[in-house]
Length: 232
Ligand code: ATP
Image (spheres, rainbow, N blue to C red):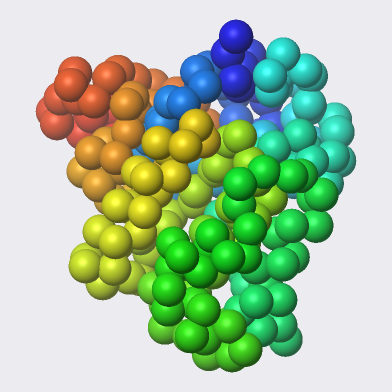
């Protein structure tokens, strides 16, 4: 069974339509890179899947169940988690409290505080610090850890590498690869196209609210992607 099926999805903000008839399928265990220029609709697509914005047309099914129209907390409880752009840590909470917020969905599974601290040992050392007092890379670890604490089947990552040093980005992606090995599927949104495609089985390129190109990692062709990305 497909893990995620999106058909003819239309969504936006008030009078603004940001997604036009988007189709996407994701198999269990698969990683997809969602690429595209600023404003292409990548974040909007993630928001629609997580229930943060409501679709105005089309369908979203997760593990065969229709999820469009469900509130965000109900979608999280089904096993979809997001690492949002800019991390969005709770500024008044410590690292550990931020991580525990991820467990509020009530899902049981292998991801516990102990496992997050094993994955990111520096977070154990900083567990009592305010989350926002950490370096950008450490904050990103908290954001990834918080999402994993919900024991998701599908993890949506929005611009993980933004503002981080290349070595930190490499570490975060190495960690994600190990997470995928445990049966979590991923959709990775990235401005860094090379990084995103390298980390994925397939890629989809969006432009102006539509998916305009897609293929496997092996098929990724720079010229075709550049045309699709910029529309030139
Ligand atoms: P970026 O890399 O800049 O985040 P993106 O591909 O994720 O780009 P979206 O953020 O999904 O793009 O934006 C898609 C369209 O929706 C753009 O035209 C954007 O201006 C518009 N948009 C995004 N957020 C809002 C909002 N809160 N209110 C109104 N329009 C919005």
